[in-house]
Length: 156
Image (cartoon, rainbow, N blue to C red):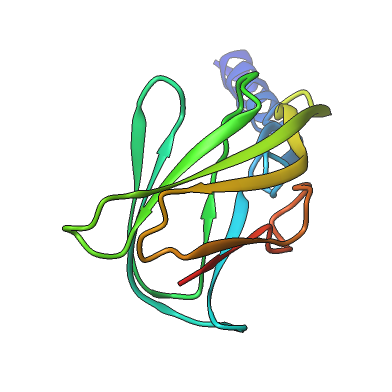
């Protein structure tokens, strides 16, 4: 019986010791960054009362949600080999969506065994088609390595 308790103790101790380190979890901002979009009226950053955002990821258009009283949002871009992502925006439910095509080149960077490879976006620029309540798009930082800087400004 002594040996049985000793074996159980060794198994329990080894299972606790073998638990993974922080490197097993990829949640500390090391993944592919999202694009930050801020909203402007005139030359000032402003809060938008209501905005609905959709993104075309190639296989289907995904609704990112309806946002109220926000001055910026984060939009995940495509991670496949496509050189662009289409973003659709509308501020009124009955309004047609305005399409903003975000063009870029991607660069894969190895992060860790747990996270794998993340994408950084370079040469980011945008083209606005059929403006409605969204009047124009202004370029911010033209590369995305993290989520600190604003990449696009939507002018309403």
